[in-house]
Length: 531
Image 1 (tube, rainbow, N blue to C red):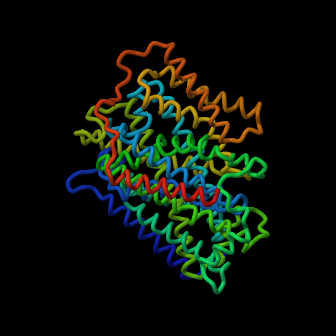
Image 2 (image 1 turned 180 degrees about the vertical axis):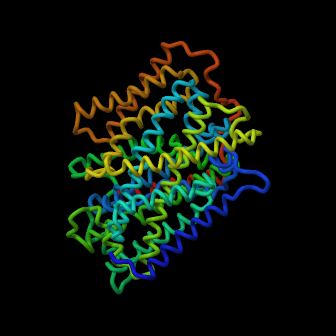
Image 3 (image 1 turned 60 degrees about the vertical axis):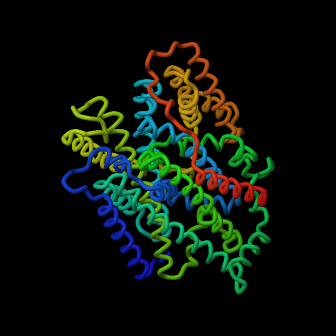
């Protein structure tokens, strides 16, 4: 695909504008430098619109756009369950999980684990998350994003990899989380507008003179097998989306772990001005999630009619971009870049937060107050400096190891989902028990983490035909049972549970309740229509 001079001007203007905006919104307050609370939690001052936009911008990356569009081409609308069930999950996070985290002034997920269970589980999970974020998540975003840039714009993949990594690092290096979150509203606006343009132009192409609406009806008529949300067991992709399990099974575990207990996602909500702003932010994100399949999945289904002979499903989205005229192509390409940069920048800042607050500050502490609470200026400057060094090191490691780790894999994205799925049931069990069962202790939490990996590997080896989401469900049950048994058998350490639930209120505002009911009503209507 050849980019015109106009496209290149638009892409360059976007890059300069978003970089300048990020530095401006995150500029230091008059008379003082950044504290660790400023750098890692945006001074706990984020408004709802920044939280909601940043949740989506951090979640959606180029490989997800291209990969889910490819799944739309191969499977159909059923793949949209990953987006629509996430909207339902965000309601749960907003009502029952965020109140506990914000009431206890949680900054990182390992910190919560220490306050709830003890220091061993904090150290274990901090190291695990750092390894996962650097060598799995950050490498995959950079590598698969560079593939997208290479396929669409013809830029050498190695050069694209380092350019994406370098820009994402510099984008947030000075301003931290605030630079990312406060500019993500622009990123999301670009992502949504660009995606809607692709969807609209593909449907218009199918509809011809009759327009977009007629194009959609024609698409449904010509590809009826691609418009079922719940797959039957005989469907060739049933193992990927095993029927009702997307509604009542393992997909809930994946979503709860991702949206509720994943540092680089939940960090936005932890930086809210207050609980009300955090809950408004997750509701905003839930409504955006309802829209995502129109932007991501629909172009892939349209390619079934417009490009039925594609050699690989992942070629669907880039092929649909061929329909875009000069200028519009540059806008949509900028939206793809925005998705990559925002996801990478979010991941980088979370890596820096976990390393600095959960490892460095715990094992090599500097005298002074805690992060964000009457801090000692010298201590705070050192923590921010360590965070920036950690961010730089993470980017260099990820960019250097991306090709050796992922370069020979034809199914990198699927491998990553499978790999993280070994840990997801245990992580979800640890947090749910920690939040809602006072008897759970550190021994039980560690048992759940170990059982998650062991049981996942055992089931995968002995029952390879078991769908991935169903396996997660069975492993979750086993991890919960083992954690409960060990917690009952092992006497809890006195004073280990420092999480305060006494003042936590789970009642939500009328606005939140009405918006949540609206999200649920839309979901019911969608599944009832396309069952």
